[in-house]
Length: 487
Image 1 (cartoon, rainbow, N blue to C red):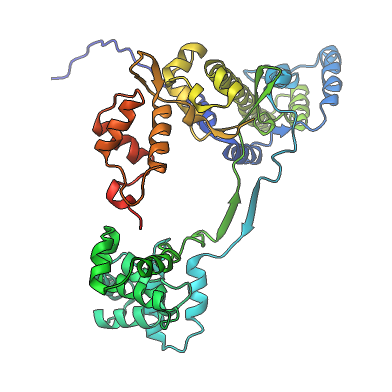
Image 2: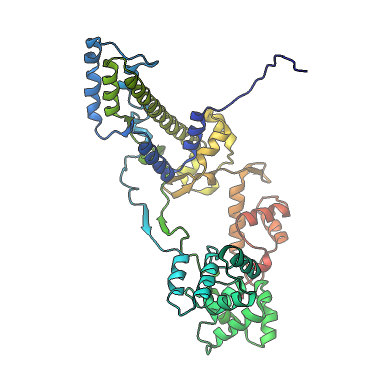
């Protein structure tokens, strides 16, 4: 039986404009430039202001429009709202962007490159091979990953060839084409099914008469597990060699590449991109000055051409065609005005956040000493700015700052805190730096275990558990003691 009843619900939904603003906030400089270009292409009512001196001309014509007293078209918006737009406020504050406008112009270079796939296809098409084998070879090349490895099982490739290409072959045939054609191509090591095979393919192309190269090949072929686990004494005993001989062999192995496809780009575009800082932080006479990179503060305005068109329609009669055209223009002008406002909010949010960070880490920016870094979490900056923690997270994500001490990744300034033996709160980043320093000075023949590191850091005033040491070591990409061992 159907029943009617009232139900009161309290909910919160983000408007599309708010969602778009959040996306704009988290974009770094290069992505932001691309987003601006896309928006300028999609909305003809939005344009970059090139000559701001003309602003006076447009504002001075206000009396002319008002004095004519013509009947305006019936639309639910005010024409004057779009004709006389104020300049975005963020452009009037000189501290919002760097004066060094041209410093970053050439820091991102796009150059046409060649993918690993195209490079291999060029070579395979020069080989004298029958049509069916060529198709199999092309299919194998298409299944290589970005590092040049064939990660798929041969049986799966055989099945795919049958179903998708109509080529019925055998596992042995595919392996034969892989080993005798694909793996003979340049770069050496391409088409390998694992690290051991990749290194072997490279070492086998070297001069085998060389003692160190021959020993390296034998180690890779027969003692790979001992090598990866750094059981050097076992290798020395196995081949009855001196330690210096093993060192020479290891030096040859270190020259090999584990990722032979690393010099190629999979999308046929090679991006030679340096980091473009989103912020510029200067220190002058003991004062830390945070600014936005000028590329983060473009001057946008509503298109003058669209303003003129809208004015024309407002003076015309109430034809249905003109109404539709006016409504279309209204939509574009609405979008342009909102986008300018969104950019305004983005810049203000970025500037307030970097100002709060600089204030919190003032001593660090003055001294440049990482030991001056205070423990700082997102909530600390959120409390200063009044923004939500998620907003702060979006601001610092993928953002960099150009400081007197070099390019700085903003996220590196944030860290938790631990209490030392003196009862003082210290940043976990400081502890990680101490840990890294201790490991860098250790005896590589007898690397320090995590237990030994606990004792050393405790002597320095940091009472940390072994599992915490292991966690920090992994975060620093430092392997366990056994794998740090060297001859």
